[in-house]
Length: 114
Image 1 (cartoon, rainbow, N blue to C red):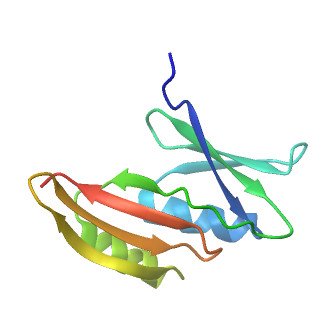
Image 2 (tube, rainbow, N blue to C red; image 1 turned 135 degrees about the horizontal axis):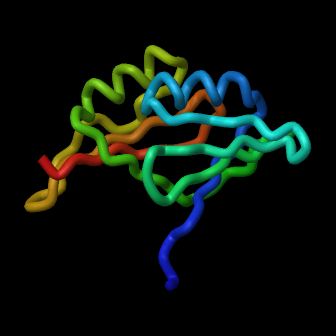
């Protein structure tokens, strides 16, 4: 109990968000027209969703996705229309992280313990 069970991003363009996250991480996104919402299957827990909005609302929350190769994911995010905001950076004794903004301006992080 008291563990994260779902996360949520926001987008103004659900088709662009679907294409971006499926290409970047291999996630499966399903649009639910009745809710104007997309469910996100990451292949593990927790899963998430993308709320489709008219106006983006800034958030201080950052999600981190564990990846094999931070530099490759940051480069791919950039190729897909995102923007790198922090290159691969060491976390002494723990691993490395990097950060990007997706095409809607959501800040996301990538992490590896290697």
